[in-house]
Image 1 (cartoon, rainbow, N blue to C red):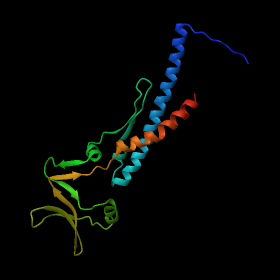
Image 2 (tube, rainbow, N blue to C red):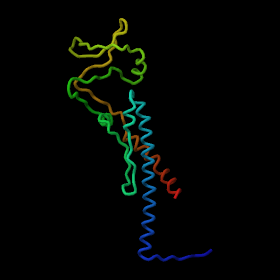
Image 3 (tube, rainbow, N blue to C red):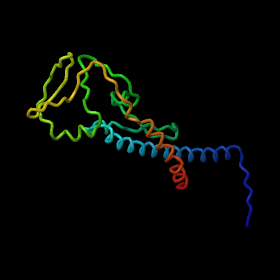
Image 4 (cartoon, rainbow, N blue to C red):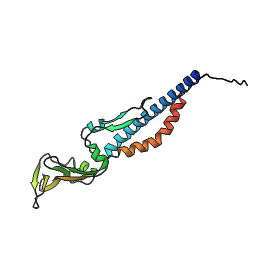
Length: 182
């Protein structure tokens, strides 16, 4: 066995440290970007569980910003304006007119009833002065929406929570895999 002593001058030591730092920064940026991609996929799965997505636009709006060696930060975000209220929960007020608040309590009710809904619906004023949108199927009337000026939105999007869970699960493993590929 041979022992080699290597002495580096100031400039060479600085170059070696810069090389090591660049590699570690590259691995960290790659790991953060891969973690954001996994979080993006998990959030899109979660959307199908909590929303009735009639158009793919909201799902397509879940985007990531990759990390780079100069900026070790990746982001999962959406530019959908309504998503903030779904993330935090709170009250929603109508800008003009009224909000259509669905009558159903869970998504299974609306998904099950979607096929039996006739196309024609109408506006109805109840005895107490409230307005509803209803539909009639033969002799049976079904309330679809209540029209209100104020509604309370439950917290249900959970983008932050899903991303935090994914980060805790994936960052250590991905970092280890990426560093071993150097």
